[in-house]
Image (cartoon, rainbow, N blue to C red; front, side, top):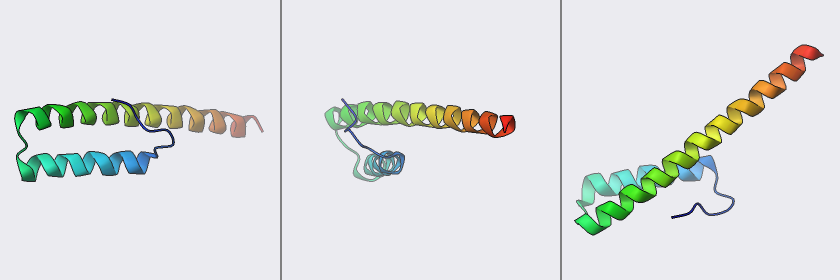
Length: 68
């Protein structure tokens, strides 16, 4: 499974919430559950990476500010 190009963090979180709600409310069969969990793992990994990149960018900016 891949992440669509241009996906925003907010959209990814929204999709995660939607999938979790579906799992909680719809009681999917085993095949659907497996696919949903796989998608969740891809989205969560992507969100973690996005947060890490953002943290690094902010730290870089703050270091530049301190140099000024």
